[in-house]
Length: 255
Image (cartoon, rainbow, N blue to C red):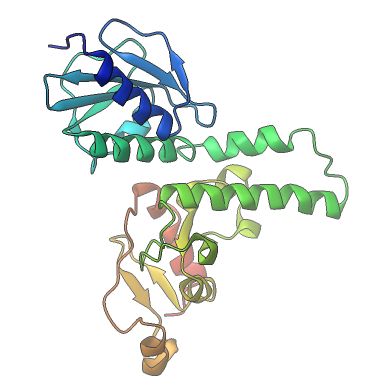
């Protein structure tokens, strides 16, 4: 049963929210602290259950569904407006949970498209130069979305140097028929530079089980030099990615 918590606990919960992007406090029902963000559409509620359990409830079901590796599903009653939540055992775990929820809310499922439409709705697109400006806005947003989704790490190697990572479309920008496809975070992989080049040229692709497939045309020397002579897998490959991967395997990959 959720009970009132101390001022010290409230301060710790508030700090966890603010530190992870939820910078607007809202009114909520007794026993919960409510928060929103100026940078993401997700609303958040925090409370405690006893001395060792911290509860976080979220307004977006798709975000909660993607948080399976963080804590456990909540069974306690949710505050009004929440759709699901997670329970963790300590403050560091709460920080990790909230940071991941914030990242996912900014990119899933169609947040990149909504942001793109807001930023470009008033921009002229009558000339090629103007259309290129709009395209650059979309490509920059797409990269930001992939950095959020993979937390600044290469999806395959784990390289955590954002300045070196590339936002690689599975189905290329020019082949997409809609902005929804172009800005779908699942239509992309965040890759180290050598993997981005190999993926773009069809020397590697991904199976539906996230296993890296290497083209036999690369040769044994090329595999060894690029570090592709050992089994590799992508992390956090979701069902959304599997809608696009057949296109890459059929149209780009070199079997």
